[in-house]
Image (cartoon, rainbow, N blue to C red; front, side, top):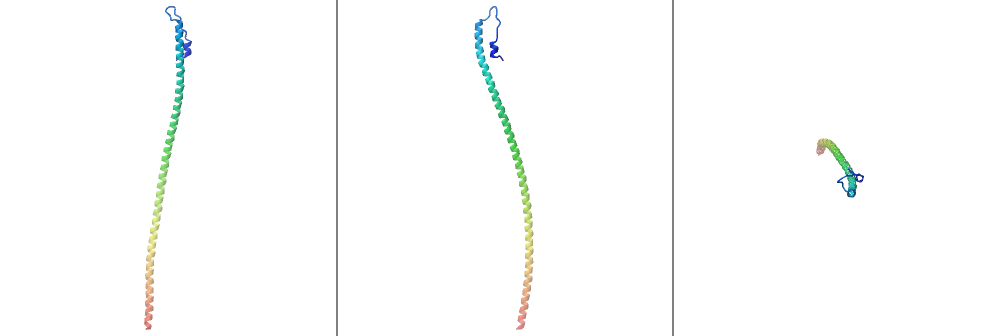
Length: 147
């Protein structure tokens, strides 16, 4: 790309016949150089702005990638925690079921023992009633013999 200095330093060969008016060419070149210099500066400024914007885009793209990775890691961690919680819940449930089953079996043994004890006490009570009845009948017999 031509620079304003390139235009300013341009030298034209002089023609012998049918050449252009040197003053008109030089005046025109001054106008072209002035406009070209403005455009050249604007172009450089725009390139700088584009470069700054590209750096911003790159920064935000990197930031987005970092956020995406963070979200992905958080999701993975959440899934891991959820899985661990489910395993812990299953373990607690199994433990509670075993404990409840053991307690139920213990209560059933206690009930059976209590029923056996009740039956034993009933038999003892019947034996005691029979003994008391026999003793009372013997006492009545003794009382009746004295009459």
